[in-house]
Amino acid sequence: MYAPSQVRAKVADGTEITVTEDTDYPFKETVTLTVTTPRRVTFPLCLRIPGWCADPRLTVAGRRVDVPGGPRFFKVTREWRDGDRVTLRLPQRTTVRTWDDNHGSVSVDHGPLTYSLKIGERYERFAGTEDFPELSVHPTTPWNVGLAPDPLRGLRFTADEGPLAANPFTHEGSPVRIATSARRIEEWVADDQRVVAPLQDSPARSTAPPEPVTLIPMGAARLRITAFPTASPGGRAWTAEPPYRRIRNKHSGKVLGVDGMSLDAGGRVVQFDNTGTADHAWQLPPVGGGWFLIRNGNSGKIIGAEGRSTANSARIVQFEDDGSGDHLWQLVDRGEGWSLILGRHSGKVLGVDGMSTANSAQVVQFEDNGTDDHLWRLL
Image (cartoon, rainbow, N blue to C red; front, side, top):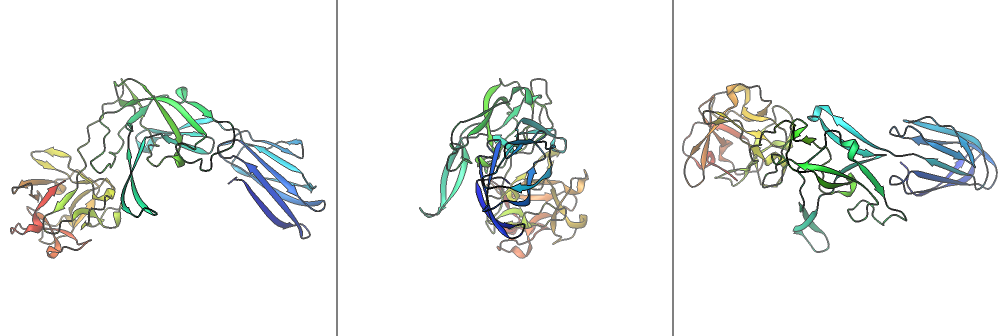
């Protein structure tokens, strides 16, 4: 890492030297190191050449030194004099990475920084004190956009002149930005708790007109869209996602979640206070005949009885969707917004073990016996 700093160290025969670093990296390209020493002294100075930099430029005491591209550490060993200066320039360029394992989404880098969509931010205090508030951040501008299928052609990087702001990692303080255009993808939505739907394959079909957007360093954004789908009128039609819902138990008042926010197959399905975490968000994608899956918004896995059991009190856990009928459910209306959640494989309904009202109590299946812990409401 390069940053403005000063280091004192003993080198060679114990001579104490100082190396002063002046730089606006990572926003600018140049790093200057100045050596202060009471006498001539020989020691090695190692410089990090990052992997994104293919053509570094180095001068040592006014002389050009050839340096290969990164990633590497480049060692400068010489007899140093007081006031010797090392100037390392790391030319930055704008690049695009494609994430094949994330539906062909793309991310945008300039030099060492990855960029995110600049989304308008509205802060709302929900707890804490005036001195130490707890704040939620809400978007005030669209976020569900896709870049052009060949996004690199439309990216325009600009940087401000002059000194950096006291905090450059804010909307207002960032001295760098990338302008481009994007199309809105109407099928890309978030639920009422603002959990964003997973990406689908790029390019997405969008007939919305291109509109200008700004990208800023990811560290300057509190709300972040960083892996972008691409979008074009001739792209693939996205399937509108079922809404994300919380599922509240009538008896306990708690919502369905996954223990420890686990991503693993076999993660326990439990009840918990509605804290707004992603594992409390669920989709109910229909599969026909009034049956649906129950898919977790955090893990992407679906729920079913452990070991495909048909027994009372069998634990409910999350699984990969294997297409079997063992993981299908149906809502059975019981009035006033409350429903049973009936499993097709077992014929039993979801409930809470022992009718517990505690956080992290296990969700199980059981014959419907009319107790309130078998009733659920979609929020």
